Length: 320
Image (tube, rainbow, N blue to C red; front, side, top):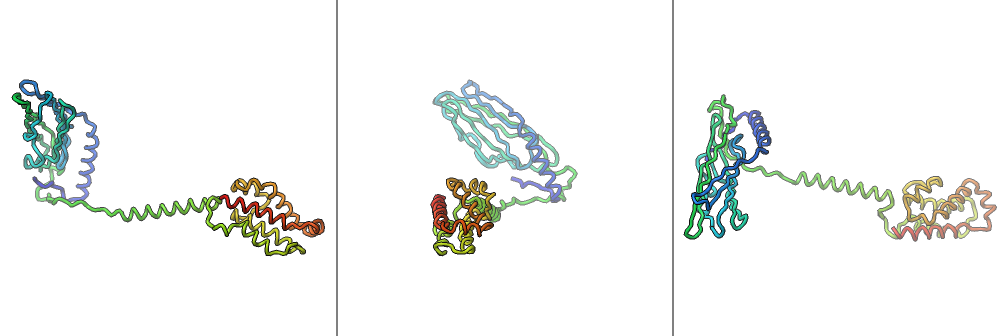
């Protein structure tokens, strides 16, 4: 079988290949042609289904389907069907397959590959062959019709033979998937980290242990303070510890005006909304009216109430 001839000029080759692909796509939807053949005694009926009869070039595959109808119980003699291999110096059979459709119907699929060096467009012919049927003493035979098609050159007719370089068969190029896999891995890691950061910012991802929760830390810090604050500094430190627990939970400073945002972001703490708002009101009094608070609240220690509030928050922290 002859090698395909390809012009040496790379730009011309790319242009021609593009034209071939465009023509192939345009003609791909052309309707099938049907040729019918029958045996002399009508036992065997062949229907040849072929693609378009034009627009073929070197290396193209032409697929034929032969629908075979035969009497019940008859066997197809496949020895007479041409098998894979060269039929001529320009035509090869690349695939043959016989399918049983029913007890009286079969389908023969034959794929031809054409590769002929021509200088101008030509009409070529796929030769006829016979199909034999074995049915006891009533053997029968029918011919698959020959089929003509238009075949064109991919080399311009103005190109001289001396300008044509015969290219040997090119091996398949192995493409490494490693760069693509590395990129996909990087993208996947980046997406996962972004999702984890978003969940962490929203408080839905616990990145600390049970011994490292904001309100649990606040409880530990409150236990290290005097049992009863005696000075303004000690009193402010008590409230500052609880405020820090709110800030650490939200990862931002939480003011009294932001409590709605806090409870919407962390809905598990909503049962403590009333107590929390009371705490922030007391805190405002402590930091802005500490003198009057110490005077009015000297007989009431706020530390037990703050401890109780932190314990209730700490219980809800464990439910994350």
